[in-house]
Amino acid sequence: MQELSTVADVVAASGADPQCTWAAQGLQACGRAWEDEGAVAVACPQLCGRDRIVVRGAVAAAVRLAREAIDALGPSFVLVGDPPLMGGLLARLRWLEPCSFFGWMDSTNRPRHERVHSVRWLARREWQAASEVLEAAREVPDAAAPPDYVRPWLPGIRRWAGITDAQGRLTCTMADAWSVPGLGFMAGLAVLPHARGYGQGRDVTTFVLEALLAAHGRAALMTADCDSDAGQILAKLGMSGRQQQVLRVRSAGPVAS
Image (cartoon, rainbow, N blue to C red; front, side, top):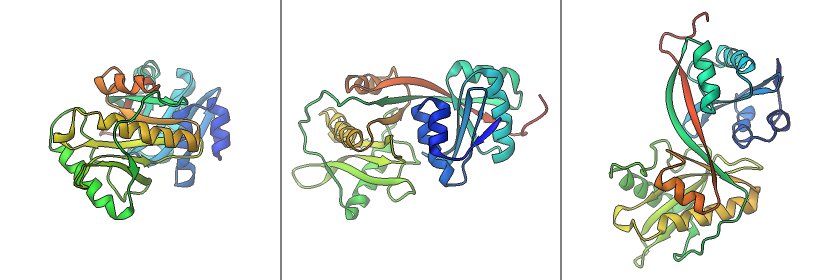
């Protein structure tokens, strides 16, 4: 087993895996990364609302990496990876338990979509309006509501894009957040309830996606499910999906296994 100390090391060891590259920003913020017989584990604290360890590779080596990472970083970190690999970890490490699933979607291709709404980057003074749109969107219980951990002014949030109505009121927003060189990341898509159904979400996503592709060459986001309606819309914008499973340490903590 070898500890990786730079982003370049992680990129080389993971074969430039997009999610590993994204998590490698943790090396500058108390995160760590390891490689073992072709498998990698890349840990980043408070990345998109969670202490994450992205794991790739064969099960036997991934088991060793999972033990090393949790021993070094503690039980607040969750393990993230492809469901077959996570199933292998669950079968061998009794102190892990299933937590959730999500879809990781990314793209290197410019979206084939002509926007019908005017979208722009918001001035810093408008971030409060973005916060209000996020809160209003969360009040409507559906799968498209933005998660609580995406808020203006949080560390890692770089800028917000938005659409305003004829009266100048913000109706839709999305953030460039937790982006790193080589991978732009999108989060916090929110549309006011009365503005839904008119393509605003698709237009603001297209705008941010184009900007991040121009800056980084690849852009990504997380969705509840790659096969959901939102996932299908993202696929039409040229993004491809990969289902991911999250494992967490049982409340009793790691035990011999």
